[in-house]
Structures are given as C-alpha cells and as structure tokens.
Image 1 (cartoon, rainbow, N blue to C red):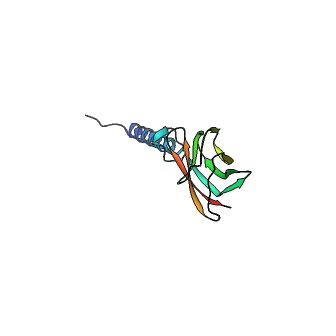
Image 2 (image 1 turned 90 degrees about the vertical axis):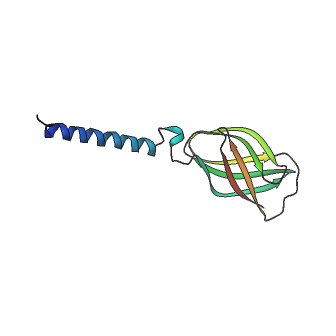
Image 3 (image 1 turned 60 degrees about the horizontal axis):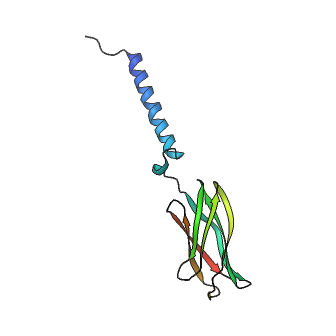
Length: 130
C-alpha cells in the first residue's frame, strides 16, 4: 500500500491556504454583511448646535463605510426632533439638520444627539450649544 505522493500533499496544503486567505479577506472587506467587523458610521470633528431665527440647527460630520439612511435626529432630554430621510453613500459628510420645535438650550452645554439609521442602528453625536 502506498501513501499520497509529495506533489498531491503540497497541492492540498496550497489549496487550503488559499481558501483560508480568501475567508480572511472577505471578513476584512465586509463581504459577509452582518459578520463584518467594520464600523458602519461614526462622528468625526466637533458638532455644534446653534439658534437662528427661532429655530435650532445641528452641524455635524459623520464618516460611513457603507451606504446609510438617516431617519431621525433627536437631541436627548429635549423636545428637539427631526424625522428625516437623508441617504448617504460611503464617505465623509458634513450635515445640517433643522429642529423647528422651540426650547431653551443652555449656552456652552454639551448635548447628546441620537442619529437613527434606517437599519435600526444609531450614532451618538456629542454637540456643544453655541
């Protein structure tokens, strides 16, 4: 009885290494969707809340590596809410959101703003009121 030839063993090992490499690359580049370790979206730079003509506005910048839809923006602890439908492709985006509700914010305070996404996830944005 004879064992496998050395050439066949090398071919099997090479094939297994290629398959394992492809699996690792697929996870790194997010080809398996929900199993991807990549972050979907996050805040970059400082965010600012300000008032103009009786309305409040939020200027903020987010970076996302997947297409996203912003469905709601809410200043936590206040009635300031904006239901919206902002669709963004992957990249860095500077956005301004208007809040038509009236409320009194405290000058110099930091507020948490929850930016809800269409897939059920959300981004917490820290914004100072100027």
